[in-house]
Image 1 (cartoon, rainbow, N blue to C red):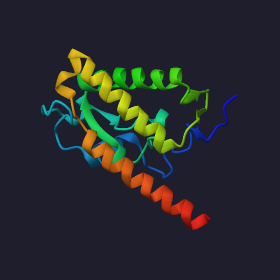
Image 2 (cartoon, rainbow, N blue to C red; image 1 turned 90 degrees about the horizontal axis):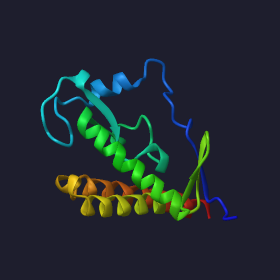
Image 3 (cartoon, rainbow, N blue to C red; image 1 turned 60 degrees about the vertical axis):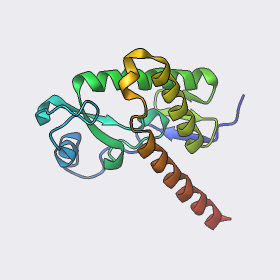
Image 4 (spheres, one colour; image 1 turned 180 degrees about the vertical axis):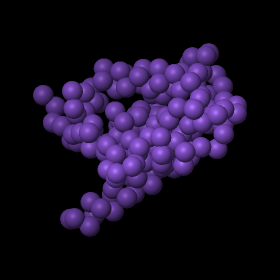
Length: 158
């Protein structure tokens, strides 16, 4: 059995302040447009979408990890994310349980593999043609920033 490097508790980042909810966040980041197709929508017709899925370490209520998408784009991205997560499970990078996800690599490495797999699927699937390069630059910047933060925290401990 492989050693678990990191155990992600899926309940770790539920709403932590009274009155802090998905609806409140939706209002805070609302700009009138779907972040993917750029069409204009009313707030009630947009869904909150996690840029980095919670199953691979994305925070639930972090505004930096949330965007607003129309139903069509949200469903399409959710299917893509599920495909990528299932590939990570088959590769043995993660395994999920009822309340936890076990990481067999460092979380930042898991996220890097997730983005890599997702970009391969996007490039190889005609229905995702318009998504080529979508969010990749932002995600890589965020991943690099998080990696540096983690490394500096570990260097301080040693």
